[in-house]
Figure 1 (cartoon, rainbow, N blue to C red):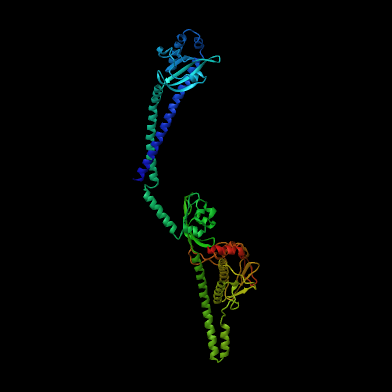
Figure 2: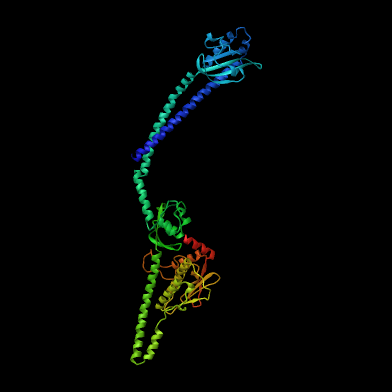
Length: 537
């Protein structure tokens, strides 16, 4: 059965059931209304007869029916009722539509009106089953008789059936209109879903969910008001936020401002942005078209590792340039050695070779480690070797501090921060410059400084040097807007320091260049024990 038929049948069923139920309720209310109207009329007639002076005076006559019968019949005909019966306190009739019944005792129980109450109900008498009202007749405080007024139940049914035709006609008309309305709604729904069947819709949804959630590229969709409607798994992972915390919120309330800027203004070629501590490439076609707000999609891709590779490539290029310089100097040195040997000055040649051989350490004892971290020591050793190849002296100084165990996650952050600071110092320096890295622990706080003899940081940039995209170095010459290599490293440093509740400053160095000083509080023992317990679970 097609979706169109299913929708139509369900709606027709709803319309028919609703119409029939409404008709039954309306019919019941109509029957009740007719019955109540007759009850009010009968009660008014009965009370008026019971209070007529002529009727009251007739009770003292030798033949009360002679006076009461004409009055009762006149009132009955005028009121369009079946009967008006007046009886004495013994239940003997003084009036009746059938004169032969006058003088007989009533066939139904008169005890209710004779007790002073008004009776309303259905009873079967000499004329058939009737809806009747019985009231007492008072003379002073004494009850001297009753008045019974009624109408046949068959007449009530006839009145109800007389109105039933119009009720049924209204029900049929409502059902027909409802069926045509259901057909129109079915057609509209079919157009809105592109005339797809349920199986087609289910297949599309499954394919969409599978595709979106298996993509390595993050996808974030917003409606024309800027409210996030869709976040796939990759986007939630890249933003370090659960998808449920993003969907339904305004984009500017949960996304970094630079991502919102890409989403709103568009960036079809992609822009390198920093979200948290991740380097992302963000693309979007924008949320405005012809001056109007439209739905938009933001695509984000993780370039953190690529950015690190680019930085290493820049370092390799710098190293290659330094090696070319060293090769030229080495050729000159070989000429000197060759000349000394040819002139028989072998001792001077050996001394010259010893002076020209570069050392291989970073200025610490052979068994010493920086802050007790082997990986950090290895990193600085590599940086020192790279600096030496470029003709730059890199020295590591370590304060005499008690040995402190550095947590694994804290050490990883130290590697990120110190590595970026040293890379920036190496890039800022030229042949013959000097870099000094100092590290130590004071009052449960790691203090690291990196200073150089390079050009330094201008005063007007010191308030912005840690902002994304700000750099004192020339922009990348690759021409690829998606992989700019400047203004990211120090931004990552600041975000790591802020996450660790630390601080970082840039001032003038005694060496003549820039001095970066970083303070990072060590995690408390209690907090570290909780983290260790959590990691073991």
